[in-house]
Image 1: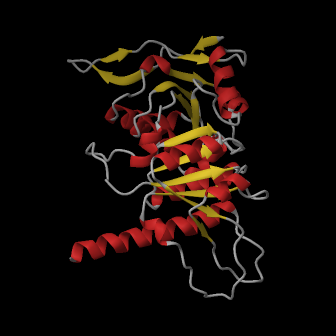
Image 2: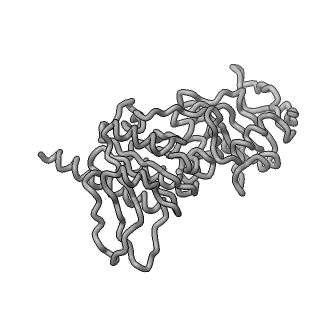
Image 3: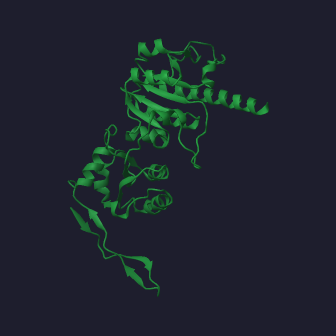
Length: 317
């Protein structure tokens, strides 16, 4: 059910002679059984969208990131509290190619918004977007720059194989974008990078970096081998004295895919057998291990450092 806002509100739209024009009354969704509220509730409180289902984003910053990344909005939901964020979101949408149709800006009460929100402290604005269709080739070459070009670097792919904590998944995706990875693959058994919690942890990176989900590990291995991409695995970290040098394999400079295993079970035996090299991070004996998000970030930083050094050396020749 939707009701008209108190109103016949007058807003500051002016005509040629300066008179104030009355806009059509705003309809507010007041029933929890409204089809749009049901759709938002399922998306914002779920574990990630199935194929064809929308990606749910909550909060003004993530919504702005989504529209600027070129995602197509299906609907924007705004509560009374969230009205103050609307102008900035629409300004970002106006600059994007897809934008947000005015007919799909939906309003509801703060109470009903809180009931569909996926967070303990709702921010009053949420949106659902159509999924972007990435390909394996996209993951190898990376996203386009703002000028519509590609970087031309050797592929650097992060493969999440059984990482089940969505916070770790989001952290890894964020680090992947920050340190220049060309793409991310979330293998079957991994938490969905497009789930609301992982999206928040990625700070929007999961909306921009080329990303594939739900592919079986043997299929990923076969595709990487065919593309002549080196397979690097990260097994249990080594015990070492603090300050020991981290010696990463030279394959990080080449076309490489870094497999990150689950927090408990680690990587499948078939992945370890297929590996071209193994990466271990020396840590203090006082620390048992690093979680997947931290370990992946350390390795990605080292890959970025090696690749930058190689480009700098080539530039001096």
